Image (cartoon, rainbow, N blue to C red; front, side):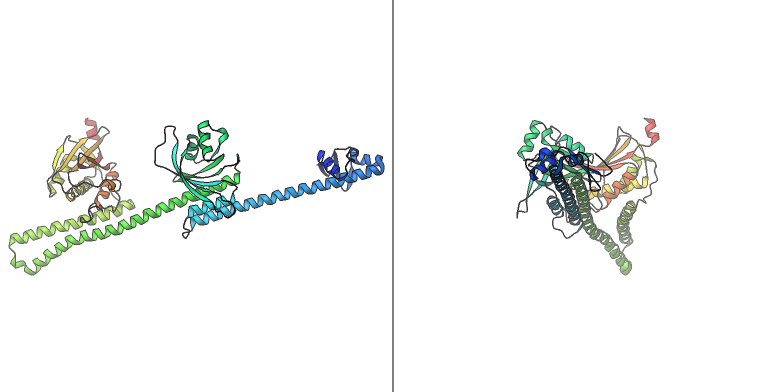
Length: 487
């Protein structure tokens, strides 16, 4: 019943309170609802009061006291709930702040571990965990291998314990995480095999959020519960999401820093190497020039011509090194100029071999024209032949033929010492060097990296392989349209 005020329905609850205050008198309280409006008592309770005399007055008084107690209790519960919710939100916010500081500051010994411990302290869960995806291929069921680093909650003074274990992410979870979505697992919805797997780990429910780097799923962070089928709140999932994003950013910064440090170290080593390579021919040039300047009359014309030829050769070596350095700098800034034209590959290779001091066998299976910059192709071939010279061996071979996909395939082979297998993935990186041969300064140098960049700028490529003991650099260039039409 409503009379413009607050309607409060007590029903059996009011009866229960009344019976506690006045045992044996609840039978006198006929109405099931009492409405208070401006301090007056209305409804069935008022009618009973007018009719029932003193007993009615006592009974209604009891009912009013009981209703007041019930209202007070409900208000206290609501206030307590609001206080509990506020405390929980505050804990989650503190956990997010602690995780953020740990992952952003540089003076924390274990940033990720500190962040996970903050999550565990803020949420009522059995454990928090971090998964890192493995490079192993999926198993026969399509499950993805991961390494799970678990922090279990402690009790009392026990701060908890860490456990590292192998894990398998199921196909459904893999698809969700790979798409950047979270995934919740409840054992009640799993097949028997998976249920047994989770029960062996004492897991009833868990929730995972993906960690991504450059939009690639690389791991996960999550909560697990051992003792109940837990429903994860939006705030908890939001905290996990934020932490996963911060861990991904932290991993990305860590990897970028490691690569930068490695690059700077390689660059310093390379600069020292280049300084040595430049200084060696310059020393020869200066020595020959000093001899000619001081004792020109003491040399025969043949000797003077030989010295001048040696000076010219060493000067060209210096010029080649300087050209590589300038070209590498322009390639990094994207200012290398490529002027393609129709080029006879057979003629171009022949010209390079004529000017190269070392003899090499040349086999042209096809007379092919390529669409390329002839000056840049010469640079690439000179770099490849120079690398073959440095590797030793008694033979070098060049093969030219057409591929089935419209490319010219030019192979430079040598049977020298070869490039160590561990360097195959890095040989085209700037400043890469062969540390297994320290006596050979800059034994890979900048030339191979420059050669690959030039090949790609001409819509081709340069790849490395080994075939029957031969080191093979393969230059791929697009076939000229006229040559392609002739076929």
